[in-house]
Image (tube, rainbow over all chains, first blue to last red; front, side, top):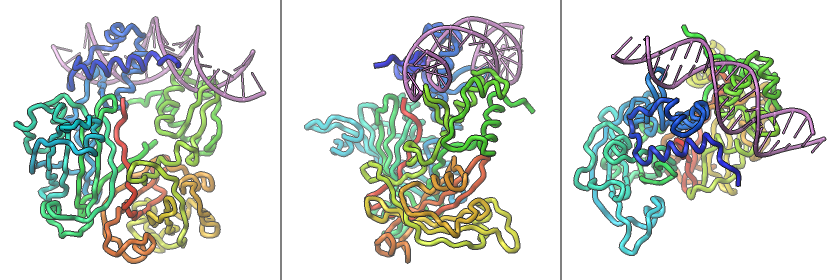
Length: 243
Length: 243
DNA sequence: CAGTGGTCTAGACCACCGA
DNA sequence: CGGTGGTCTAGACCACTGA
């Protein structure tokens, strides 16, 4: 039972503030001296806390301007959770179209993955079907489930089509910030509606991506299954950093 | 034309030392005060340089013991560049078997990806074919190309079968440390020899992973195409960090 | 110009490790 | 016990930003 380092403590308190909405995405945080005073620590201890949050892409610092709460919609983040690129490595801006949206009882697997209670009546989730287009070509179809509790009114408003990432909309409209994802990839045969939407023959190989997306405190908030036609596109993974 | 921060300068000099073999993988580095004195900087500037190398998984620090040069073969790294896991997320230790090894002229695409000259006679590479087995089941087949210049004598010795990662052997036997990879994933139909080795029917969907692996200074040293049968296994990608 | 974050230092105390 | 890295502080100077 060892005591948490002071800077970790401060980091946690800042995260609590972010969860509580003390500062909202896009906001400027108070200056270093002010924050240091507020948490009763030296400025360099505060800086250690901020540095970890910057490394985690949750905060953003700009010399001469201040420390900001990251926006998913900002230029440097728009691709960070979107991995489909052209086979030659070039990134293209995706377009999204909602094919369907309904409110249903969560099946057991969905409830477990989202850590919702398996009540008798069933926890409810919104299920969406999304088509993703790159350069005018339909490339992927996603089935998405999110808890209704976190997205009140979604059944009425839905999500407009466009190229802003869904995660940007989660954040902007519902205050839900995705900070981590876990993808499991496999290859499957195209079937039924997917084959039709993607304009491929039944039985053609598709890339299937099953994702769980998390917000603060490792809380899962979305599960999504994407099937992508990888004729001219690929799923890109970069691992490690150059030195 | 702005001057590089001192700690970046120190970091670069340490990396140069690693490339030059001044310290080898597994070695203990000199203590902080000694390194600080050696580079003529304050101890906290040195620490900033070391911290970035630790973050990049190149160095490893243990309180009370010292700072070490990372080994690919060490427990925490054995999985870091291996992404195939059971569909339920459990990691299993892979086994490797070499199916073939030959020395050939690099085709243009290979030469370009490895940044080798397209000489008239052609740069030479070793081409290997590897089978990867998980829990006794053949799950993937990899075709690998590496420049002969970096792996002298490989055609005689080859790589013994086993479960140590190839990257561990690159490092141990040839002093080549892989620090970054770039994978492009797609879905393809099983064909010919691959279908046979993986014991699947022709036309079954396979996950195809095309990888370029880099060492220091963004130098590419290996290209590899893996085809995996994702019946019971998946390619796992974690993105972002929990807070 | 004043205010911000970025870099750099000196020095203290602590926790961990192995002899 | 002495040596290691881990944490924490105070304080200085610099570079960038916007008014």
